[in-house]
Each structure stands twice: as structure tokens, then as C-alpha cells.
Image (cartoon, rainbow, N blue to C red; front, side, top):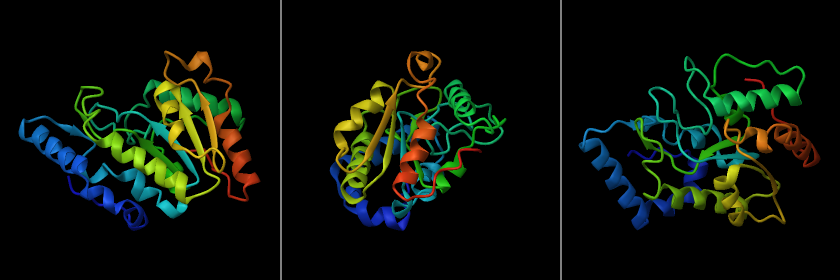
Amino acid sequence: MAVELESSWLAVLKDEFDQPYMKELKAFLLSEKQKGFTVFPKSADIFNAFKHTPFDKVKVVILGQDPYHGVNQAHGLSFSVQKGITPPPSLKNIYKELADEFPDFKIPAHGDLTSWADQGVLLLNATLTVRANTAGSHQNKGWEQFTDQVIRVLSAKKTGLVFILWGNYAKQKEVLIDKSKHFIIKSAHPSPFSAYSGFFGSKPFSKTNQILEQEGKQPINWQV
């Protein structure tokens, strides 16, 4: 695993790469490849969220759990898939909610959310890799320690961030966030299994923009 972290992130996270858990994680990823397993996303895309959203530019954090495990889906941004790939069900529901919140939102044919990341939306999965066709296969191998530290560092060193937590897994991360200086928007997950239990109608995107404007920041253009 080649670590190519954007410089402003490296400045606040460099000590993590010397921790024992990170060395164990690197060894695990190497062993996966030595056993002949395909790992997604490809190595160059593992830290894509950090490349597109430098630490200095983060305004919003959308937390996912696991990368997509199908061919050519995952590219290092939570909920996003590469162009040319049909948007998965959760992302289709995200688009439906956006269309409900913003009458001029046009549901796109693709699922690439890079434009959000480039505007300061950190699309962070708790686990940054996965074995092909095996959901959750790289959980509890060390990635969560790293991404929990990412959340802690953001909470400690920045103010006025909007954390969007969908579903029970993401909501567990609330304990890492200083609620006296940041904003938390939470609801059910956009998955088809839970979207009708509190995701639809929760208006996370317009609420986020309202908060950003209150904080004197540029709102996000959610159209992709």
C-alpha cells in the first residue's frame, strides 16, 4: 500500500503511519494480494477522498462504511462510483432526496461525486478497502482506527464543520465529534432497506447549505 496522502492531511496525520496497527494493516493488504484476491479500490484511489478534499478545504463530512465491492465501482469516495457504472441503490435514493429538496436538481445518469469532494465534502468511508465481491471483508483490520483519528483531528483542529451521519454505523461516530463547535445531521441510511424510515424527507443537503451560509461559507452545489 503506497501512502500518497495530500500534504495538508499528511501534516496532521503523519504520526498514524508509524503506529503498529498501520503496519499490521499494510501486511494484511499485502497478504490479500499474495493470496490472489482482488482488492478495491485500486491502490492509487485508496486515499482519493483526501486528495480531492485537502484538510484545509473540508467543510462537510459524509461518512460511509465500506467501499463498493463490484468491478470498477469503488474509487475512494464514499457513496460514489466511477463514471460508466450504474449508480447503486443507496446513491439513487440520495439523488431522489436531492431532487425533492432542490426543484432544479437533475438526476444524473452517472454516480461520480467527485465534484462534491472538490468543493470541500469529505466523502469518507470508515474502511478504505474491500476484497472483490465480499462486503465488509476488510473491516476490523485497522482502517477504522485510522479513519476514527481522521474524524478526531477534524473535530479538534477545525470549527463549524457539518457531519452527515446516515444509519446506525455512522451515528456511532458521533462520540468522536465535539458538538459544541460542529454541526451533526443524522438520519436513517439511504439504503432501500431503511430510506423510508427517516432518510427521505430529512433534507440533509439543504440543511447543510443553510448551516454553511450561516457560517459565512460557500454552500455546496450538489448537482453532479
